[in-house]
Length: 383
Image (cartoon, rainbow, N blue to C red; front, side, top):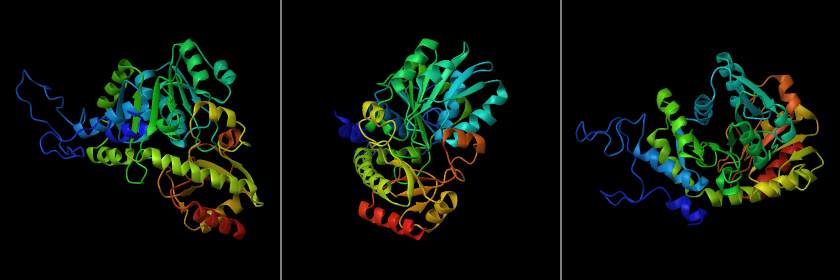
């Protein structure tokens, strides 16, 4: 099957008892066993360790990403945490994208570092910088591409080669583009990580995470940590995400088309100082974007002339666009990373990696693009 058929049919089948076309919500803590000797003969015992509704979503994501297996989590950060705990111990070293989600930065610098794990934040857009930071004890690379919120890209294939030579695991946070636009495992990554909260859900309805492994052995290592920590996805969230997956491709296509039109509008607007969107020819890594992905996605950022105060005025007054955290939904969202998604990142570090105070992040939705542009134009004129 091709991608659009897979997103609807992969991993699911009609309920054998009733014929229900949608996977049932198995809202059950425990599962009755036939006998002691036949324990787990039906595959499930306790929903912390496995649930049929969650398993259906895991099977679907495995097919969409082209991996060996998938583990779903209660949040995207649970996925990041369990993955790091699966492969890092005291005395180990990890290389992380210097531009990453604020929660990932906080986990590394304020939690896991307390347990003797060392982290280096590398400019993963530059493979030479990544190579220079490799140590004998480097066990994991985490690359976020496109990066949140600067949209900086990393060459997945090049970094995968460096990781392989170091005998380490390469994890790619593929949240922004999803497997519809970017196949991280095909490009050499060992693990593809997602906040399913974003594009897989697509409707601001759930929080969740997933890690798709290239091999069964990698999956087993992460699954052990998940079961040990109880970082599970609920059946209801899995069911809702299963429904969101069915329209992933058509949403990604239209949101990306809307984003391109908006990026071109902003780039030509006299009150906009700069705009960053991988689909623009002016984007410094436009050629890499075309090389490793089949689409440019629906995320971008821009800076209004006048800096922080002008940006705040725009975000506080804009109509149709919603001022909120999250991204990837059918609703268009505007976010101020410095005070919202990346507030945990120290000011000096934010400035160093390009998260400037006046950065306005856009998550482009499915509204009529003319309405979105008119709302932006009106807000910019009022600044």
